[in-house]
Image (tube, rainbow, N blue to C red):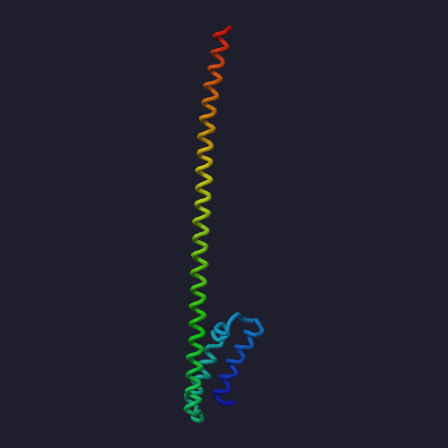
Length: 134
């Protein structure tokens, strides 16, 4: 097995891991196998039996792998940013709800206090009316 065949078998193994649903994307599989893949690409580059076309193909594979890993990292960072943004909005909405409930409760307490005061005044006036009529 020459170096290019070894590289191709590593890529096939990565694809099999994704197909068997052990990993979600090819980028994850390639990340885990990156040292082996880089060693295989280096083997193609330094192998005396490799043709220029094989070396070029190995370089293309390296660039493809790099693109897939970068794309996956970008997607992951976007997803993380969206998730963090949603969490921040949820936290702000929760805080606003809590604040609204607190303000409602404070206003209800003020209304209740005013009602109690009014009731005391009415009770006092009723007592005065009662004592003045007797």
